[in-house]
Length: 250
Image (tube, rainbow, N blue to C red):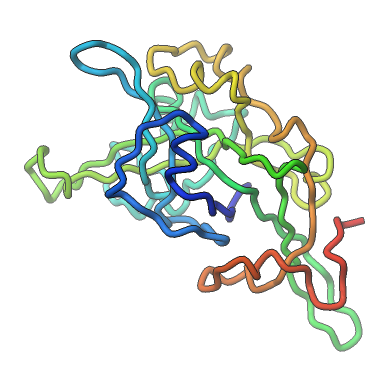
C-alpha cells in the first residue's frame, strides 16, 4: 500500500510541470508527511462544455476516495489505495477508473519495515523514503470521485460536494520490494494525456499506461521515525536515523 508520501513542490511549479491551469486562490502548504484524509494536489482533465476541448487543472482533493453512493464520507479513510489487479472491477472504483482518472504529484512515498526487539531495545517500525533516483517528481496514478452531502439539498452549493481521490497500487519491485510488497503506480509524461482523457474508457489500454515509478530506478533510504506520527512534519523527517547513514534495507 501507499499510506504516506511527501509533496513539497509549490502549486505554481506543479502547474507548469503538468501543463495545468491552477487557481492562485487555492493553496496547500508543502508537506513531508501527507496522510490519509489530508488535502492533496491532483491533476485532472475535463472537457469544456462549449468547445469540447480537454483542459487540465491542478486542484486540491481529500485523500481517501468516497464513492458517490456512500452514506458517510468516513469510508474514505479506508479507501486510500486501489489495487491495480481489481480496480476496474470493484464497485467503489470501476466508475472512477472509466471516467475520473487523475495524477497525484509526489516527491516520493514512505513504507515501513518491522524491526524486532533486541536486548533492551523494543520492537519498532523503521520508515523508509522511496523516490526516483534523479529527484524528478512522481506522477502517481489516481482516481477521483464526487460525493454529495445528502443533508444539503442544494446541488449548486459548493459546500454540498466533497472531492476525494485514491492511489492505484501494484506489487512492489526492485529496491522498494525489500521494504513492502505493494507500491504506487505512476505515469510517464508521454502518457499523461491519454490517462487523463475522460473520453478514453478501454480498460486494457488504460492499464497498459501504468508502470513502476521512475521505471524502477528508485532510491530507498531509512529516515527519521518521527514520520511515524502524522502530527510531525518538515524536511527533518527525511534525515537518516541517528547513528546511521540512512542506507537501504539489506
